Image (cartoon, rainbow, N blue to C red):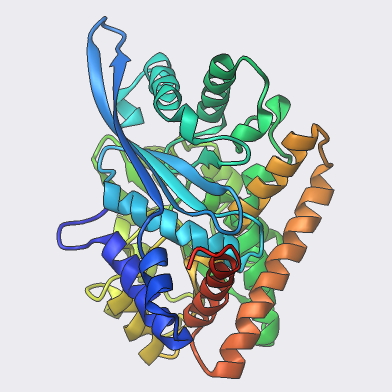
Amino acid sequence: MAEEGYNPYKMAQEQFDRIAEKLDLDEGLKDLLREPKREYRFNLPVKMDDGSTEVFNAFRVQHNDALGPCKGGIRFHPEETVDTVRALAMWMTWKTAVADIPLGGGKGGVICDPHDLSDREQENICREYIKAINKNIGPLQDVPAPDVMTSPQHMLWMMDEYENIQGEKYPGVITGKPQDMGGSKGRTEATGYGLVYQLRELLKELDRDPKDTVASIQGFGNVAQYAAELFIEYGGTVVSVSCWDQEDQKAYSYYKEDGIDLEELRGITDRFGSVDKKKAEKKGYEQLPGDDWLKHEVDVLIPAALENAITEDNVKDIPSAVDIIISGANGPITPEADNMLEDRDMIVVPDFLANAGGVTCSYFEQVQSNQNYYWPKDEVLGKLDNSMTDAFYEVWELAQKRDVRMRDAAYMIAIQRVAEACEARGWV
């Protein structure tokens, strides 16, 4: 969530403005693409378990749909802001474009803390959210998905409410559903695996072997766990992960010099990705402050939690041994930090490319749901690998050709595709 003095939406607009100037976009296109096409705000009256009614603020932002229906997750977080949602919707537009899938960008959020809510109260929030937004979403309009602190179960409640309102079955209205209720095989792994597919290709370009590569990860939720899983499967070593501790209301990192045992850590982790610190200590993990994940002498850093993780204040803490950062989270590096990393010749695979595996597999789920025909897991992951590899090389090769950083190359590809679609439709 946005910290005081940090506005992710302004950051997203600054990133866009810089590339729009490089592409020499006309003023009409700039004005169209730097603001959301539509946004909705509403108050959700929710019945609580004690019989009271609590009102929750909620948002849905649809940034652009020139390439296809809007796509983007719904976040539950106590510090959610409309500017965070705007920024994430904008980044989703570029993410779907750079991945070359026919979707636009959207994002939603509810200001709430699932830690403090029963399952029934969370279900009520989901249903009220759909009651408020149902006329503005749909398989060919805007397709939500899980995000921070939302899950396949939340998506199932939302789909069920939408179908109750419509009086028909619409499995393609939501993605990230449970597999036995219209979800896609491989969707759970998709974001983390997609990131590591790209890391694998980057290491090939650098003539390095994953077996000789060490990583540290911020986070231990879905993206972090599956990125660690595939990286370890390729022979890599992960020495540290981090997570939020609800009891202490702060983050910790967990370090083991010879590498974490992923299944061991998963066995002492709750559904929010929080590790039991006492059990971790007994299993030989060193418990460190949350920010220490970026201070280890490793080759690769993988920020895979929330935005604003690497800033001008802590970038100096990154050891010289680190030469790759590949982002699983959205907006984890501020522009100031990005410039400082460029000065250090750091290879930064930008977030909206690196974590595009999730939305790519969500697109696969839309296709399967709308056809009512589902693919085997190996086929899904094979298609995902091909898509992520193709997207990586498009960006990598343009970066080499134009002598620009990967973030700029990815933006150039994405913004150009969306701009051309807007022009082709006659919007400008």
